[in-house]
Every structure is written in C-alpha cells, then in structure tokens.
Amino acid sequence: MEKMVDDGYAIRAENVVKKFGDLTALKGVSFKVKKGDVVGYLGPNGAGKTTTIKLLTNLLSPTSGNLYIEGIDVNKNPQKALKNVGSLIEVPGMYGYLTPNELLTHFGKVYRMNDERIKQRIKRVLKTVRLQDWEHKKIEDFSTGMKRRLAIGLALLSDPEILILDEPVMGLDPKGIKEIRELINSLSEKDITIFLSSHLLNEVSLTCNKVIFLFEGEIVAYDDVETILGDAKHNRISVEFLNPLSKDEIDDLKSLKYIEKVKVDGNEVKIYNSGKKERMHKILTILIEKGFEVVSFSYEKKDLEDLYISLAGKSEGGVK
Ligand SMILES: Nc1ncnc2c1ncn2[C@@H]1O[C@H](COP(=O)(O)OP(=O)(O)OP(=O)(O)O)[C@@H](O)[C@H]1O
Ligand SMILES: [Mg+2]
Image (tube, rainbow, N blue to C red):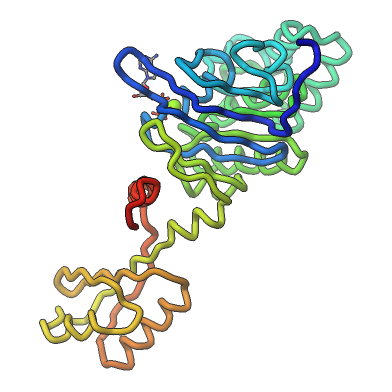
C-alpha cells in the first residue's frame, strides 16, 4: 500500500457507472489523461460532467468502476490520490468578510503547510491569478471574475500537479472569460495537467489540447482539439441569391460538383458538403461561373448540439 503504482497517467477512469436512484448519470465512462495534457470535458447540461468531477475528487463514490489519479484509486485511497490535486467544484460562496490573505492562510493551515510556505505560496498564487494588489481587500468587494480567479488561486495553493475545474468560466462576462482563459493557458505552460469541464466548444478549443465529449452519460469522442474542430466544420454553407431559385436552377445546383445536399428556403439556400475550405472556394467559383446571382456566401459553423448528435451517431456506427 505504501508504494504508489504510477500508471503513467495523471487521471484514469475505468468503466465508471454512477446511478442516482433510477437515473444512470454515467453509463460506463472510461478515459485516460496523460500528464501535462489540458483536457476539456465537454457536454451539454445534465451530461454528467459535474458528477464525473465529483467522483474524481471523492465527493461522490461510483456505483461501479474505478477512478485513478496518478495510479491511485481515488475512492479507496482518497488522501493519497488527491495529494497533488487542486480543484474548483462548486463555485464557493467565498467567505466575503475575509481577505484573500486570510482565506488562503486558513486553507494553508488546513493543508498543514508551515507559515513560511503559506506566505510564499500566497504571494506566488495571487500573482498567478493577478490579484496581488488585492491581498488585503475584502473578498465581498470583488467582481465575479475576481472571485473566480481567487477560487482558482485557492486550488493552486498547495502547488498541485493536477488541476480539476468544473466550468471555470461559467457565469463570467467576456472579459472575465478571457482572464480565466489566459490564466489556464499560462498554467498549461507550466506542465500542470488540467481537466476542465465546459459546455462551450469554442472556449475549450482555445485552452485545451484534447477534448472529451460526454453525451447523456457516455463518452462519444475523445480526440485532439484540431480533429474535433475538423469534424465540427463538417460544412454547411449558407448562400443568399438575389432572387428565389427556379426549380431548374435548384436541380442545376444539386447536380454541381462538390455539393452533397441542398436545402432551399426562398432565396436562401443551405449547401452541405464535406471537406476542406478549398472545396467551399470551388463551390463559390462554380456558382459564379454558372451565372448564379450570389448575394452572400457564408460558412456556418455547426452548433454544438449538431456536433454532439453527429458524434453520438458515429459512436453507434451511424452516419454523419
Ligand atoms: N445528487 C443527485 N441526485 C440525483 N440526481 C443527480 C444528482 N446529481 C446529478 N444528478 C443528475 O445526474 C445527471 C448528470 O448531472 P451533472 O450535474 O453531472 O451534469 P452536468 O454535465 O454537470 O450538467 P450541467 O452542465 O448542467 O452542470 C443529471 O440528470 C442530474 O439531474
Ligand atoms: Mg455541472
């Protein structure tokens, strides 16, 4: 029991099932996170993100299956497994009457750090989350974004190797989101492993190098951000024509090279094709050459829900 069995992964989930009464929130989730990776755990509301994160931090126990941090079973040996983990789970009420210095000192003592170390870490952490000028100000006067940065600072207090964050940008405005994004990017440069949940694909793509898609308690994809984004860009082009197309023109359009599917709505037409941007360029060129009176031509990003559905379809052997 003394020796840790390092399996080479920062985080590993093995066939994790979590039931709440009749509801199965996680239906056999397995994934591995390599050390130093920044992984986005992406899924719509109710997918099971928070449940997974609570299992990873031993706030819940799995119905079956196992979760490991650095090779140690979290639910069997939580203290040891979570020794190098910092986490942000529920956005805490945050003791408004305290200052960051008081809050962090309190938690430093809880973590049994000595006074010298506490002082040193407070300086470092507040600098990291850019609150160094606010060390002795009351937390109740902080903006939501500042409170969130402080909560991440608290997660960083013990200098963890792994950071687990549940929806770190939830409820923040664009400026607050940008600040957290910059913070996460600066942390990822320091070789810290980060596992963060979100329902925002775009946000995840700006901070993470890997994405896990969770949909209704099941993992439907786990890949590099670039690959996932490539899938997301399974193209849908919105074209507006000067006038509504005639039936002949629509038939013409459908028969053109590179166009797979066409959906007409007055003078607005959706064109579907799979493939790269060069193909879209070719489609536009062909439309113009054929004399179609194009007013606008734009590339519509599929929304996240479309992506989930196409990924869920794929995982069952379905088509896009
Ligand atoms: N303590 C609980 N008791 C009963 N059901 C629960 C409990 N916790 C979560 N659930 C249910 O489990 C499912 C997954 O919830 P979870 O909070 O993990 O989703 P989530 O992906 O974090 O969603 P959100 O984006 O809304 O935060 C939901 O259907 C939720 O209602
Ligand atoms: Mg949640």
